[in-house]
Length: 597
Figure 1: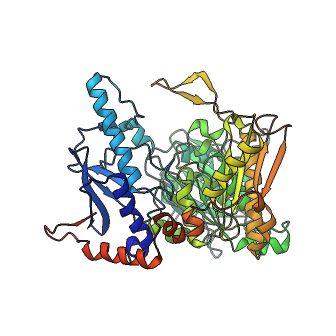
Figure 2: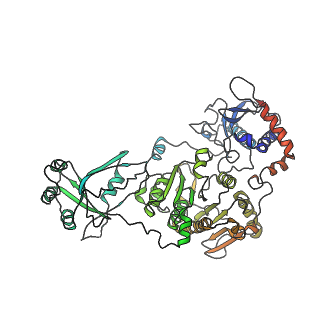
């Protein structure tokens, strides 16, 4: 079923608002490629098309020039799709808006472009979004290295090991550290190989040896390849008729894994160079993880192990919340982010330098698997402005959503409330002077939009003489186009918010009945220092449901009744108008005229 067939009130509201905003319009509804469109003319000359997404009204419509021409306002179009980049997009869209607002925004843009041409200005009055360069696009395609773990048959003492490092797989790394008695230097030669590899696939192959502790100690202290070959033959590890003997004699084998079967968690890695006649010894530790969570409270551990957390935004806040939840025992995660980890990210992120160049979801997946290798992770490299059917399938059974991004919060709010999924919205204030955490539970608390709006009014009413300290700037942080960037928070400032968000999320996961949060403090405002509404450092202001109410015009909280009241129509009248629209709606299979609005 299409969205407009199941949302009668929404479709009628679209028609009424378009008629009110553009009374003399030639706009028509049509269905093309199984999607609902509006086509028409603006300012008597500009022909456009507006496409509703499948998740409407949780996500905004896309609007295009009729002929997809890039000549009108080039920098306000996305190069691949031709969609206009308007001032009403992901950051400002919410369910109270409609296609009429999108079309009005385009009208304003066209007027601004006309003024620019008349004045012969170089730049348009409105915000311009520069297209990424080819290099920037390529940089985002860096991939993550995830080698599989290795196992050896118990009934053999020698054999070949051979494995690929596939950048797209999510298997966890085993830890390799330098082996030396004289030094405490733990530089990882294998990790260095993984990091510096430039090909899409890297192959590690060689011979594994299961032997006695005495022989093992002898082998790992040998420093030349020639002596290693001699020792392997003398200790009868390899007989001359052994199929592996020829490879070693000819210098075709460069890597060895050696272990004592009495100590199965310790492996020694010998990296050999036949040309230079050298051997580099390292040790790998495989940790016994059977008792990984034995020090967690037993009841909570059993409960959390079955829960699934979706993290939307895997930056400084999202990565740390994921780490804390994994340490609590949560064993299922969906990680969503489209960004790649860069050097400056590391100073505030849960991941490390050897993750640079990886997509954040894969780097964070590796981090969580190092905490608990049995954790189940679904990484999704994508910027979500529409929750399509594939994303919905992955996250609809989540126990909690962590919305750790400032983009598209209204889209996630509508989705979470409609699916009955509790959500946490953490946010760090500019310069890290504090932050806020919202816990939104469908049918127990107001939705995110209502809380966000009513909280702003509440603060303005109670703290009349104070103003929010918006982002400051520093001259050395100036971008090429002259814009000033705000100084971000320190990692420790962001961690305060991540910790509180993690605690509030764990309370949701442990609770058997969400009704207990009716009287709980679901809004936390945290201040690191005396600023804005905080009169002292490390102050925590808590608000319960009694302080914040659902807004009367909120479609998310109150559903279709809000639209009935706005349009002054009964459900029966809505049904009638809906039936009329649908009956006149033409599906594009020929040259039929679509329904005129």
